[in-house]
Amino acid sequence: MKKILITGGAGFIGSHVVRRFVNKYPEYQIFNLDALTYAGNLENIKDIENQSNYTFVKGNIVDESFINELFSLHNFDGILHLAAESHVDRSIEDPLAFVKTNVIGTMNLLNAAKNQWKNNFEAKRFYHISTDEVYGSLGAEGLFTETTSYDPNSPYSASKASSDHFVRAYGETYGLPYVLTNCSNNYGSYHFPEKLIPLFINNIINNKPLPVYGDGNYTRDWLFVEDHAIAIDLVFHEGKNHETYNIGGFNEWKNIDLVKLLCQIMDEKLGRSQGTSQELITYVKDRPGHDLRYAIDASKINKELGWKPSVTFEEGLEKTINWYLNNEEWLQNVTSGSYKDYYQKQYS
Ligand code: NAD
Ligand code: DAU
Image (tube, rainbow, N blue to C red; front, side, top):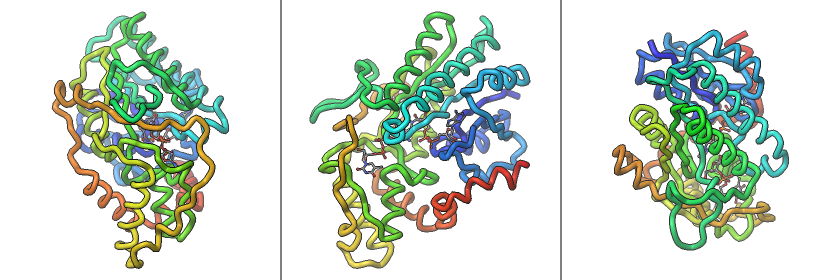
């Protein structure tokens, strides 16, 4: 049985990846390593927690001796590394936390993998899940490709760029077999309501202001999280060693247009008259260093691995909004903070 380590599996994207791997690959023993920071929520994966091929490990990737001990207990065949500090606004408040987890934490995993696998890399793989934000900002035209130069602008993207570089360097210097993906903005279920889409859905439900940064004319390329999990599965199994793949939705939206669409759909769903939620839009001070536009050219993963998004944005958004409306308890537990008690109840 192959042992696969997934880090950050209690977070947004990680929970979708863990669920997919546990359900689809009974022949793998899946270890989900997560520190359960504010962003880690075991309620995200409670549907698979009792499956026999799943083990949860609470621990911090910044803690080198803990990581070395974990690797002395288990010989991992593959590592999918998603654990990270992921929110740009928080990185502006506390950049060092991002260096610790995203750079030092990644280094600890790289070292542990290199030491465990020594030079026997047959059928081993280190997969770093990264972001399109490492490429910086686009102007009105063009798309990020795998050869676009790195030009990160926020402490978050600088820390992810740094960890990408270390992953590549370990491939070049020590021959570590790695794959790397840079993905655009995800949306979907189990998304912590500090990011644009879940925050605004929650605020609309609760009649709270919708804080649009600056003039709202910033563009993001949105991808349904389950399509990202499918792409991750594909790259992990079929991607070429030492290659990078860009993943995106071919789905650009200006923030203000997306927010208006959300308001319109939410008014319909909540039985409010059209225009009610739009009145909640409040223009606020801009994010410092705010990147104008992200957009991914995902043709390499499409041509080489046959991946493309399986749902349209309309379908994905419909599924997402329905999920938040049908999972009020999850939202309430997250916003009240009671989701933090879940680990204590289940594992202690
Ligand atoms: P998230 O913030 O929802 O989840 C991060 C998870 O990592 C949490 O469960 C948290 O507890 C855990 N974690 C944080 N610090 C840790 C530490 N020191 N040790 C162990 N665990 C720790 O993040 P997400 O949005 O699911 O993103 C997952 C990965 O995908 C990140 O690497 C992020 O950079 C990347 N990514 C995210 C997006 C997006 O749109 N959300 C897009 C592209 C790439
Ligand atoms: O592009 C991939 C990245 O997407 C990931 O690497 C990050 O982990 C993820 O958080 C996301 O980063 P963004 O900064 O693009 O996502 P966020 O949801 O924070 O913001 C999306 C856009 O909406 C951005 O232009 C800022 C704006 N915004 C955001 C918030 C939270 C607002 O106008 N108001 C808000 O309250």
